[in-house]
Length: 240
Image (cartoon, rainbow, N blue to C red; front, side):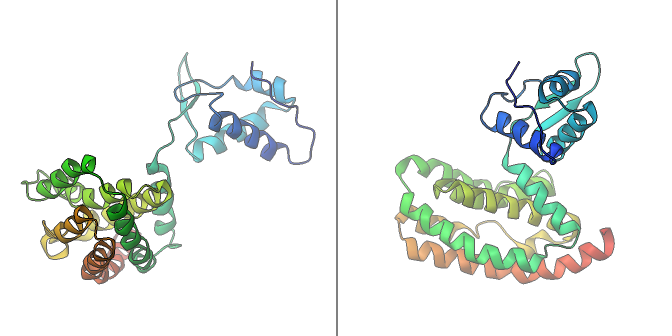
């Protein structure tokens, strides 16, 4: 058994939750492993099983564990991914706590800097990835989802190359939210974003021109941000 500390304060639920999160984040429980049963945890924490159940439910909502049913059921540690942050962004958008105007404004500040850092950090090992990303934009798509995936790979690749994982999380999360609105509302994707529009940014990154990479990314974002803001109105009228 993992040695947890008995809980003796007035904030029982929070203390249990904090200790369980720390155990997962420190990989005392690794992705795919099952947490001890409610009975075992209640004995170790010296709290009721109801408190344990509440803490595990909170872990599930935060994406730290998944609940399985059946004889081998229980709480299993999940592999934390960028998608969990993106899902949180999407939930905030759907509850009207974020808007497309907010997202467009942040993208205009963040992604030019990401492009600048990508140009600064670019090395020959990144060449094939960026060339493939640009070529994939011109391949016939099998669905609108496939098309959106191809047209956002440049942004994701630059976020990876920039070397700042927090920037990568932010960029991927904003792209996930943008894709949700575009796929739901847009009737003509070609008017919103066509293939080849990332070429100038990619070439600037490959050449190591940091300032030009930032300018090209800002120009690219301005072209369709207003369309996205207008699409939000339709999205909320139809689906929220």
